[in-house]
Structure formats: structure tokens, C-alpha cells
Length: 302
Length: 320
Image (cartoon, each protein chain N blue to C red):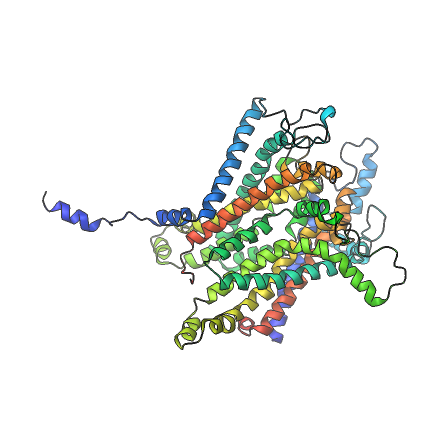
């Protein structure tokens, strides 16, 4: 009874710091990161709420697809905060409604490309040899294409359906992740614990997924965060060529596309949806960068 | 050095083979064949569809399709749906305009990226550096066409910067120098908007590389022997910025050419990007598919040049 207390005191580390806690503390000490995170949360919450409400036919403040030619191309006012478009639809309602689709495109496309990139990068880095050689030459070749051209061509040939758009963006933007994961695996597969697992007769897939992958989590997570705005920007670019998500479903990109015929008469059709894309993309990039800084263990000078 | 170049050439020829496979196999993606009329058009009889499949050799086994399509592209037998002209000449006639625009964009990306990156590395950790990196991400997050529209709405009404085409109207027989200055003047606005993201990406890359170099042993040695911090930074650390400067050529090109599709369309600039846009609108699939191949081949060439250039500057690379 009496001997137990001092032993406990020495064996337990005094401040409970785990690597995760250290990263989180470093991340939340960064005002830019907090700002970006808050903006992302606002966007995601708005998208979720309007998305769920839309399922029940509840729209705020107006029905995003209700046309009223009597009030077409009205500038921002108290009734229509961000003005109305050429069919008299409320731009603010369309922005809210579009946020659900635009963010979904970002998240799902990122998930698809992450899955592919991690599996291909892991196989390439773990096995090495000719498998690695073939996979990496394919990556090199894909990186020679401007990804926007390739995505656009695939969507043009397959038809601009939202599921196709998401899949094509995901299936054609995994190359960066694959290279990164491969590089991580190349160094991690030589570590003692992986050798030990192999020596103990552990099979390959458990080694890849249970031993190596968790240790490459930080950089993979960072690329995931940065992949979301990339996909959002690509969808907006596709909208420009009328190959994005098709009207009447609003997305941030196609509101701008619809509005460009009225470029010099109705600036609000261009400015506000662009601002939404810009703010969302910027927040994801800033949070991604802050995460990268917080998870980098190597000492930076100054 | 010759050995290195030969090795790079060998790898490049493997890559161009993979690139050609990827671009031509995209044709088989189209459900029901790459016809420009849509599935439900009642005027299109099965005979017309069959003719179209024949044109792309879709009635052959897949490996034969590939070789036949490649042969057709280079012999000019692959024709545009729009005007029945060989696809390859339609694409190559856009080459000068595209090269001018992208060379301009890549030059200012490299120059301003370098200046910005070096400045940021010198001031690393300060509030100014924090603001400048926020600014860099802001430039990356800007959708290019949105910026172009904002500028069209605002600035062009007041300043006389040309926003259309490659040449001014009304100049009938310009001298050679005048013609090129005029061309360049038309490149400035689209080229600058195109390069905004590239400048930002490049500045981040340079900043990171120089800062990483500041941790090296030879920097500690330089400091230990009492060199002033200025000399340590500008003479010893800054040399490392050469790497991002050269590899930047290869890594910036795909993004620039990808972005040029939108920017060239907005500014009615007759380059390859605009051709891609027209091809999508006209459902001109032969042009679209071949354009992917040509653009990727050009980027591969850019990468090859960057690699060789890098090996000239840094002899260590040749041995890898």
C-alpha cells in the first residue's frame, strides 16, 4: 500500500502529452488555422442544414428554383439580399442550395482520389521492383496531362451527370497522393517495427494497413484536406464550359455561368458565388497548411 | 552527361507511349461511341452510327484501334467533325499563340515567384510572412474565370488594356517589331491572370526550399566561421532556390495549360485552350482527344528540357 504511490508518481509522465495532443495544441495556437476552421464549419453546417431542409421541401429564404420574371435581375435589396437572377430567382437561396452540392463534390471526389492514391501508393512503395516501376510510370504519364483537360474530356464523353463528375474528378486526381504515400512507404518499410512484424510472420496486407499506414496518417490527412478545394475549383471550372452539375440544380460554379451573359448589368450574379468558392477554397488551403506545419516534426529554422 | 540525356530520352519514350494509350483509350469511354449527336436524336439511323464507329475503328479489337487511331492522327486522316480538316493541323496552327501565352505566364511565375519566395524566406516567422503566405493561398484559391470576370467588370472600362484576340484592329502593315510588341501587349492581361496561381505556388516552393537549406550543416559552418547573416542567406542558402526555379518549369506547365482553356476562352485568345473549349461545344471528339495527346506531349518535352537543364546546373543529378 505504502510503496505503490511513489512508483506511480515516477512511472507516469507528468504532463499527459501524446503526439496527437501536441499536434492539436500547435494547430490551435495558430490564429489563421482557427479562422479557417471556423469558416469551414460555417460552410459545412449551412450546407448540411439547407441540404436536409431541401429533402423535406423547406427552403430558406426562398425556393431556389422559383422563377418570377417580374423581379428579374434585381440588385441586392432587403427582400433579396444578394439580388435576383435573369429568371427572378433569389441568388442567396441558390447559393445556400448550391453549397450542399459544391461541398459534396469536394468531399466525395477527395474521398475517391484518396482511396485510390493510398492503395496505389502503398502497393508501389511496399512492393517496390517492377510493380513500383509500372505504377510510377503511369503516374508520371498522367502528370503530363493538364488534369483539367483530361477531366473535361472524360466528362464530355461520358455526359455531365453529377455522379460521373464526382467520379471522374476523383479517378483522375489521385496521382499526387500516390506519390506521397509511396515516398512514406519507402522509408517506413525499412523501420524496425515493420521488419519485426515481417519476421513474426505477419502477412503483407495487415503490415501495410495496420503497421505502416497509421504512421503515414499525418501527410495523408493534409493532402485530403487540400484535395477538397481542388475538386471544388475543378467543378466550378467545368461549370464554366457547361459540363458541370446541370441546371436547374444550383452550384456555386453554374450560378456564375448562368450570370455571365449579364456580366456588365448584374455584377451580383458573378461576385457572390465566386466569393463563396474563393472563401471555402481559401479556408481549406489555410487549414491544410496549418496542419502541415503542426505535423511536421523536422525543426524549421527561426 | 550524354549518358544522362540518353537515359532521360528512353524514359520519355516510354512515357509518351503511355500518354498516347491514355489519350486514345478515352474514346471508348463514350457510351455508344463518340458520336456528336447524342443518343436520342431520331435522325441518326443505326447506319450513320455504324459509319461513325468505323471512323474511329471501334469495330476493331482494342489494340488495333489504338494503332489505327495513332496512324490516322499523324497522317492527317483523323479529321475534325466540324470542318473536316486534319485534326493535327488544326491543333498545330494554334501552337504559336499558345507558346507565347504560356512562355509569358511561366516567365512571370518564375520571376515573381522567386522574388516573393526569397522575401518570405528572409522574413520567415514574422507577421509579414504570415500575411504573405495567406496572400499566396488566396491566389491559389481564386477561380481564374472569376478573376477574369471581375477585371472585365471593373478595370477594362477605365484602362485601355486589350481584352480580345492577339492583335489590335486597324494596323494593316505593321513592322515586324510592332507586330510582336502588339502581340505581347495582348498577352499581358490573360497571361497575368493565368499566372497568378503559378506565382503563388512557386513562391511557397522557393520559400520552403530555402528554409530547408537554412538547416543544413554547411549553413551552420558558415555561421560558425563568423560570416554575416546576409552573406549566409544570399550566398550560401539562396543557391538552393535554383532547384525549384528549374523544376518549376515542369510542374507549372500542366496547371497553366489546363487553366488556359478557361482564360483563353474569356479573352477570345486563339490558342489550344480555346480550341479545346470549341471542341467541347461542337462535340468535336477527334479534336478533343488528339488535343489531350498533343498537350501532354508538349508538357513531357518541357519536363525533359527542365531535367536536362537541371543536370547541367547540378552535376549530382546525373548520377542518380
